[in-house]
Image (cartoon, rainbow, N blue to C red; front, side, top):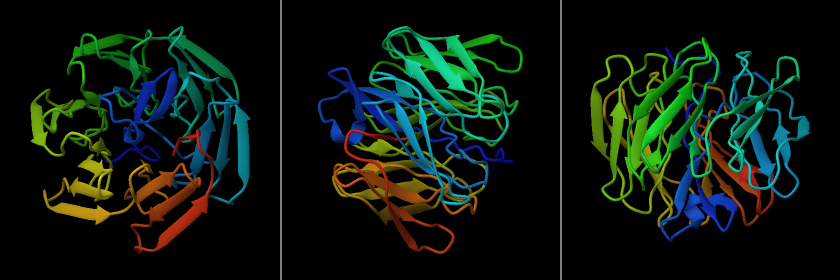
Length: 309
């Protein structure tokens, strides 16, 4: 069963000139970076909250979906990578960043506002936090493009797990593709559009050709069967291409335009990820609620921000 209040989705970012920018805005084969497993329910009401992190001042700006109130938190500095997750297992997203310059994770536990730090990773790594041991807490994890190795600290006992999977140029796309409650090691290869997944429940390998160079991988729970669906968003035409895991049918949806940042999430709380984009040029979020197909727009953020929903 899909873990309560836990959404896995990879968000592509690119390191360009020392800045973190959405991969959809980069066209020169940038080094992909990802916030990995995003648990973007900051108030614990079962809805994805609209939120951005501003590198220029390190402030998080969150709109709580439960009451539409605004919460701000200064946490992080320019050059950090936002990595929200439920590190303390209380069902709410914690403010967290990973700092490439020293490999340290800085987390504020939402349960008691205490600070936790963990050195894990090195410059050039890509943070891929997830639920690799299925204990209800987000695990610290990085993927190293130079050797294709995943390095994970299991939160339930502090043990380290490593797995070679992927190669330079791949995009890490961790998710629960086999519905066993654990995050699976997975990469998407832009050069051939193939997804390579290790199913955690039996360690079998699953491959799926889906997407092409220039696409942005946006895996998510689009059909609410507890399994992560293969999905890409194509900046050239703004179309989402999704394979529903429950019956392998294909769903396409035109939503967004070049320059947008895809930000899928369960904004309406119906258990399915909604098609959504954030537009840096005007700071507006455009969301199709999957529950009733209504459209929601919300101005939140400004150019240079990073969406963390």
